[in-house]
Image (cartoon, rainbow, N blue to C red; front, side, top):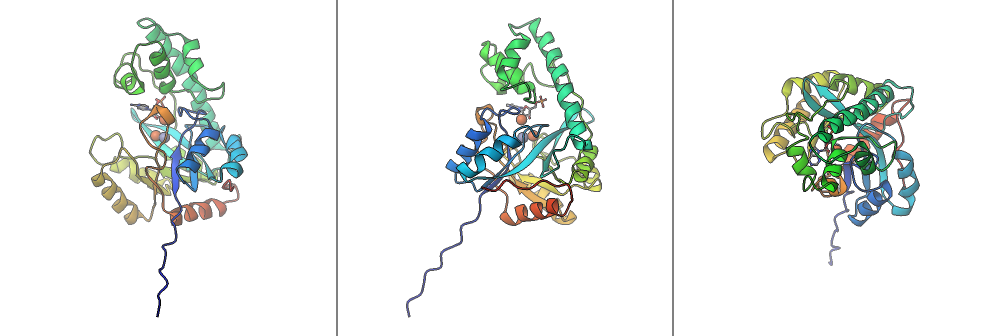
Length: 298
Ligand code: AMP
Ligand code: FE
Ligand code: FE
Ligand code: ZN
């Protein structure tokens, strides 16, 4: 009897961490979705730093590109002197939430901080505030060191963002100025209150081969963390195994994402992915809250 060859059902391709020109990515949201379609991605989370400003633009391009968008934010946090990132997925974007107020304060502080860094840099390099502003797509762009780096590249001071970050923009540099940001525990709690799903972004990325800060992760879990971004370019195999085990022990979701920044970083769109079952769980968690946001479906 002839057998019918069983074809595997194609798995959905989901990248839960991307940036656009609303923060420090170099591709517009429209281009980002076109590129995602080109890479045969079914869904991406738009997770610009400290802003929901790109969500409207995403809504306008899902139907044309056929790519589903999970509205997200990468929330900048401060833990001691370390910068820590938390992904907020499907949180309420209303300006009245505690989360929105934290983000607003962070963006305002980032602007003053960038100005102070430029003032310091301008003493030694050909750089003006207008040069830095010209690197941001618009007035509402979340300003960061990458925009200062791009202005330094345009001025011929450094070759690329990487060189700027390794030298004058490093936290140890005399030109460096920090910005205000919530603690990771406050951010996680604020994301939950806004009906969102809180994921620790690349928690082992800054540890240079070591494991993520276990005490910090425990504190974030106690504050209500939903998941850990395990599959990320800056995590080694050993770190991924360790984080996967930690997630299993605590019953946390495991996500993956490219952290795509266009030409701003070598990360390739879709190079790390999230399992479809995990996205379903994220959607149902946000859906169970009265304030969560809906996925943008093509
Ligand atoms: P900021 O939040 O303004 O302090 O800047 C940190 C941002 O710069 C992070 O979101 C990264 O995406 C980006 N970044 C950090 N290191 C590098 C690097 N070596 N090359 C390019 N971008 C970087
Ligand atoms: Fe970034
Ligand atoms: Fe990050
Ligand atoms: Zn990121």
